[in-house]
Image (tube, one colour):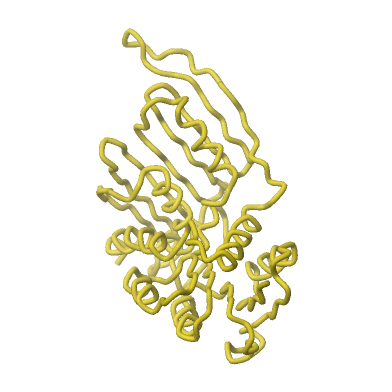
Length: 294
């Protein structure tokens, strides 16, 4: 049985707290609310499992302290602000579980996307978009705040062997950090575009995969995965037809699935899907794109 310290009780921490209440392997939970003056020293001595939902710029120091004290840790994405910091955390590990919150790897929508890839032939292009009129940030960028989700999704489908082609960014309403980031990648002969902004009039959370025989569109705003047949025959486009419109089963939320996976790994000592190596793979690409934002 597991006792969990939840570090951070803000917007996302409150959602995690609700998910923890449904896990039968958890016997006790203590909330460490930094805003109220709580500290890591307030975690009881018999707790050795922690979930960190503090602002992303606090992740590294908080995770470092907890790992040095021997805790198993789940850290909300990103694991840290740079790949160097992620690698420092990996170096601290002995036999602890360290997991990063790449929540979309636990989303049933991604499961449906991957199950239907055989219907569209060879993948030729992926576009991943995450835009909305969101929470405005002054201490970070959409690259770190939003796009770890999309990078983790794309890498899960295509792998990590990529070439960064170009980066486009814009500061719509300030002269400091960008409000919009878009970049193009090459994975072998597959091209990819990733775009994110918190200063955007429409709410767009969409993954589009273009194949030689068809296409898949995962629109998370309407909880729908659509599979299309369509190709080129005799130098003409065939009629685009819908093969399936699938609704991901959200009876268990992606967050609860993710938290359950972490607790299961704590109990079984299995390696998490989104382990420290996965965090480093995502952080490596983030660092590469970030060099263009200065």
